[in-house]
Length: 182
Image (cartoon, rainbow, N blue to C red; front, side):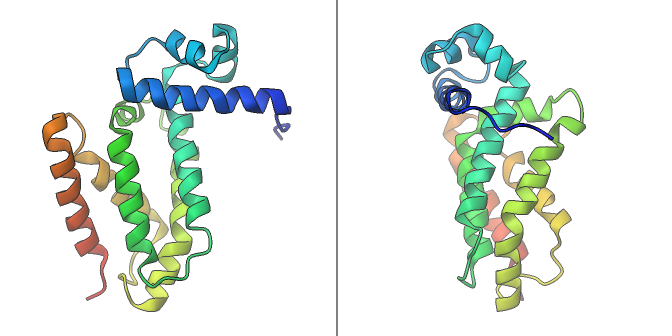
């Protein structure tokens, strides 16, 4: 069982995640990790104590985004909650396009298990509400969340910035159409 972080350690970890999100957005996924430490106002040792490498910090940023989605969609009531969830997920995938490459290149499948579990946990409340309302297909399952997330992110891989938004919009339209109840 993991011990909770002390407040100062939690604050440093939060600063590192915010810095990583900003540095990756500005400089790309291959930005020197030292830039993240500098921006967070911590030393390199603190960065590496929290995140042993690029994959781990990229996954932590993505997990942070998924946790935010989970909080936002924890108790949905709108009949189209799952559609709104997918729109929000698509927006985050577009913002984090560079991080997707790190996920695809993860050294092991197990390292992605927490991200996949968090995604399912974040999506299921809205899926259940929308299914009960008859807005989305009743045959969708928790396993389909991974498929839908992969579909939303797949078109962004290697897309030129000029076409990325158009690809994301079209992919989202197709995914929304695929999940709607007939």
